[in-house]
Amino acid sequence: MQLSRLVSFFKTMGDPTRLRMIKLLAEGPLHGQAIAGKLGLTPPTITHHLHKLREVNVVYQRRDGNTIYFYLNKPVMDHYAAALTDLTEQAEKEKDRKEAAERQKVIDHFFTCEGRLKHLPAQRKKKLIVLEHMLKGLKKGEKYEEKQLNEYIKKFHDDYAAIRREFIIHNYMYRENGIYELNPEEMWAKE
Amino acid sequence: MQLSRLVSFFKTMGDPTRLRMIKLLAEGPLHGQAIAGKLGLTPPTITHHLHKLREVNVVYQRRDGNTIYFYLNKPVMDHYAAALTDLTEQAEKEKDRKEAAERQKVIDHFFTCEGRLKHLPAQRKKKLIVLEHMLKGLKKGEKYEEKQLNEYIKKFHDDYAAIRREFIIHNYMYRENGIYELNPEEMWAKE
DNA sequence: CCATTAATTCGATATATATCTAATTAGGTT
DNA sequence: AACCTAATTAGATATATATCGAATTAATGG
Image (cartoon, rainbow over all chains, first blue to last red; front, side, top):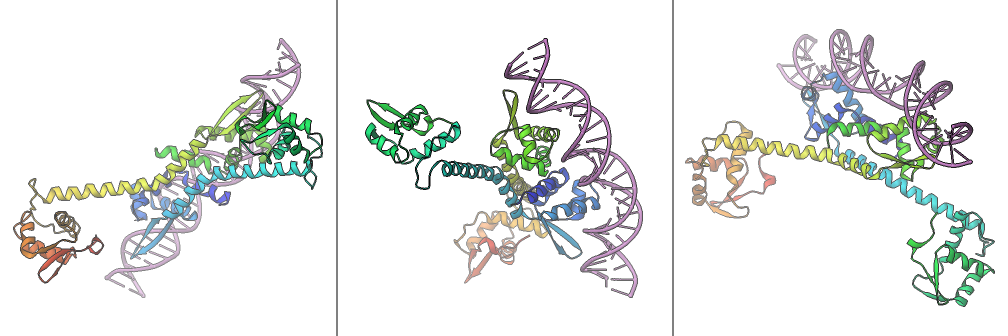
């Protein structure tokens, strides 16, 4: 849902008289004068508010004989309620999308199209992205001998020792008796 | 949730600038000038809106060094979203409650405290309430002989024939070969 | 303790809007 | 066709508020 529509809806609901009308109509349809009577207001005022409520499509009307009955459009109300919950969740997804795009940009910049690392970024944040990219080929829970790990790193860059050291420094891996293993993600360096 | 609080929330959300701020903050905390920059507005304007947003408790702040970061209070947002859905449902329940109370009032008026019917109401709506009250002792899908049904009705009133006729007229029951049976509720007389 | 930077407050302005009374329209009913 | 009743429109008024520039405050860092 576009933002401006949501703004209009909230603006419409941000009035005590209109909210009381909504509550009344949620109990069942009423005609204008009945609403005016129950709320202690004059018909023109009710017309004014009905106009606003119709603008966002939360009420509709049917004529019965001489009088017009106003109905609450419950599906539309529910629709807006859903949009409200979406508002924050949508934004979170948007954030994730942006982050993924930025990571990809860094990777494209520091790796050749054959997939080899040009050089380690100086900026910490970018370095972490690059290191994590290379870690993707390792399996969690698997044990690697130093020679094995070196071979793996050499696929990306000749200076395997430097990169192996970075893996340890930033807590991506740990070494025990010459055997290397991935740390669980929650132990990794952040930001 | 009280109505006035919901009104305040909607009034607060009914502004394009504030909704944009909400969306921004949903992606993560920001400091005032960053918000001002992203929205193309001046810091005083941002302060103004932050004030409104804090009033309804959808943002909070934490200081980090020299600058203040503003956070979206997502649980509170969710809380209001739930309140919005409740708004119409609450009113429907309220309506049901009122109807039940009115039915009980009619029953209290037309039945003695021993549970016997004083007389049939003249008003159609009240008559239906009274008839439905007496029908509650019958089981759906069960077949009753006329004599059996008469005995049942006599618990409420001596003129069983009149009441039995009402059951038929208003489509609560049907008769086939002298055997009576309840109709499904969707066939009953309404209003 | 001073300097810096971010945030807030103040004052002004332009715009929006909730409500009423009075007048008008719209649509059925007789 | 004339009449009635409900709804709407028009016009007026009072209140609220979004925004900005200028001045002020708050709090940290040197």
